[in-house]
Length: 322
Image (cartoon, rainbow, N blue to C red; front, side, top):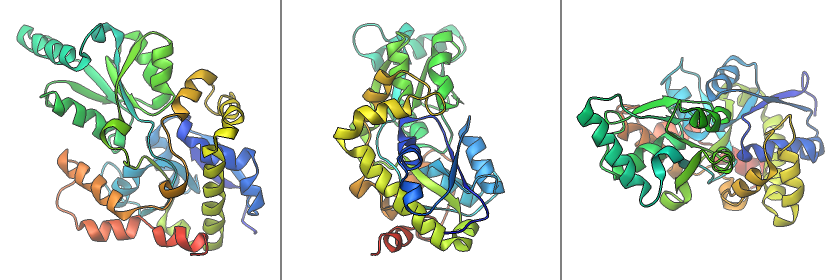
């Protein structure tokens, strides 16, 4: 399969980038005739902008980001699609051990927020990794369940995943919602305590997808099919328990996650990579749009039309010969 050069695919250093890393290092890309160069990126905004500009052919991408970019929310509009879902699970809310102590962490947090309001003190700062992410929605949902208004009672900010644990330890933020392994890194350092995991709230919530522009997909149909097949095969390899020791060592390498194998292994226990996870389910995209509407990110939109254009199970099935 000929292309004008290696495919440029971006990823953020997270456990759920495993399908891209495995596909490269275990030669699933090569088996499909693909030459690929992986680019470790520093933030989700960088991923979005590079895919939109064509500096990356595609990327490990937050599922709601595909919808937001296509609608032009938070950036210039750029039609993007999700032809394969990469994982479910792994997101979690972690609070600083300065706040948690013994007992109910949520109750302690609520008490502290109310006390600071009574004293006229500044609100606590909590972070999500990107405004359009399952992490932002999980954090907001959890806070709302405590009776807190996430837009009034606390200050929400955005922090790239690899910076979350360090900023928690430095006291810059008092809690965050991110994907594995960064919650485990915070716990291992003794600076954080995980208080809720996405699997406890939304077991089938979509997390990461392969994101490509609609233009690129239309221009490279054969390459996209090969890419889907390679990532699905890599996800199946990553999901096999017999491969976990090798997978942990692979992800821990400096050019990929560059963090403790123990944290990576713990994160893998929370994530599903294969099987029913991979076909992009349009009802999940509709649910994401409902979350975006719940938190005021999107107004009236034709949900079915947006979902049909962005979530492409037809491309996944075509690549698999279905």
